[in-house]
Length: 431
Image (cartoon, rainbow, N blue to C red; front, top):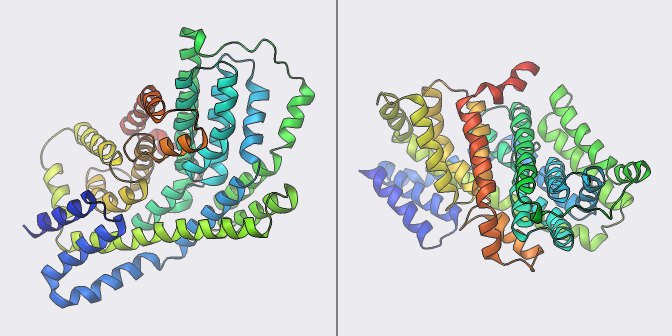
């Protein structure tokens, strides 16, 4: 009975608009007080400190800083321009270029809204000026911006690794194949869509690029690509931990933003540092308070009981997984990505392992769910970010444009749910 009361408190606080960290912390402390009395006020701070006292978590604020530094440069614009120069010959090339630019930008930022802002502010006006449909333009930017959550370095994967004790380096490796597969799936969908509806993406007969143009376009992004390879290469080769590589990445991003592009003066640097601190502090506070709530659930053996109930239900494993995926998609529409990871991981991970699945695979699947969450209302942050950088679009248009793209995302999610080996192939190969 007590867990139901605590859950009701959590849902009530969220419903009335309380901050997620406050709802989690208050609900968890209430539950601990009901079971341990005044000792709850000892257990609570201990849980919070225990969650945050992890070397691996240094990677989170450093990768956030790296992404914010690069967002202050013309990197997003240059990536989109390079993709256009190389892909303009494709029907729907501007929209496909948006997917490519967002995927690469995601590999240097790790934050989806940064990609939407950096690429969308350039891509939307360009596509609309070229006669692209508003739905295709908006949907391609919003959906591809979510790739940053899966393609390493990924902030959600860092959070999942810190909570689940799964290697962050392994999670980064596991995110590569699904990230590339999803980017390709979105591109193929766009290509087929404009073949069936040519009026959505008029052919650019007046645009021609030489090989010299292509080489010069690469010249505007080579340093960002090099930074990706150095950071991820250091992690995958074992030369550096994710935290150490993140520190080098932040330094490299500062060099790109400062000496190379000269787009960051002292005031701009202070703004980037302040934004990075606020984002990191908010995420870490949510994680700490979620640990209090999670420790209460573990104390009451709620995850074990739920796992035992479903495993012993004799339902086919695929049915149980489908139920979990649908619940996660629905929760993602109501709760932000960080909160969803820290709340559901302690509950669902014992169930997943009880069904015989690898926690590494579940981390990838969970983040693929979150990619759908950030593009679906009412909490889909990518939707509102695009509205902010592309005021010529109505929010109703943006929301309506995402429906077919979400269907593509869900289809890819089901592919990796039903065939776990696809996500684990690369980590197993490199181990």
